[in-house]
Amino acid sequence: MPQKSLATPEMAAEYSRWFVNRLAYTRQSDRPHPDSGRHFYYRPGSKNGAEVALQLDDVRRHLAGEITVGVYAINPPTQRVKWMAIDADYKRSLDDLLKLQYELQQDGIKAALEQSRRGGHLWILFETPVLARHARVYIRHLAGKLSVHVKSAGPVDGIELFPKQDQIALGQFGNAIRGPLGVHRAVNRRFWFYGAAHDLNAQMRYL
Image (cartoon, rainbow, N blue to C red; front, side):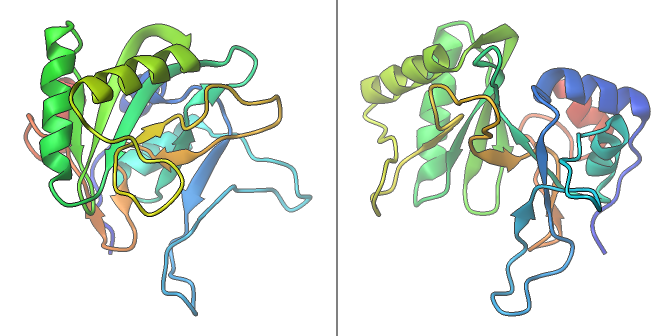
């Protein structure tokens, strides 16, 4: 069974204020695909095929470990983001994320480092939404300064930036990333942020 925690509507509202920038979302399948064994992400739809909007109770269930939600960074009407995530899942990836976290702190930015299945995610929460292209330019500049490779097309290892685009058209989505503190269904495990006790209350206080 997935790791479940007590999550309140108040937690869900605060989490949404930080991480939900649009109501489109993805959900990780509860059961593995019969051929590949993978737990794929999909965009939920209603019986008539209409797009389903993320509800506050979906966020609460994500925090409770009942479902796992993926969130999109860019809000198309504004091209702005509430957060940026730096994903690294290669050998010595945590070293690169720690270098970036330290350098961000020198700029007065306290980024939160989350465990992941093969490395980590470094999350930056903006006080007010910023243009996606500005956030991406800043992180790419910082990575270049530290000789941290930013992954593009091809097999070369490097960090991945979310959002992956500078802007997206109306009606488009970009790339979703697993919402922080969600249970990864493939390994039935919740990945916590470093710097706080491994329980939901402590993690929410930390964020």
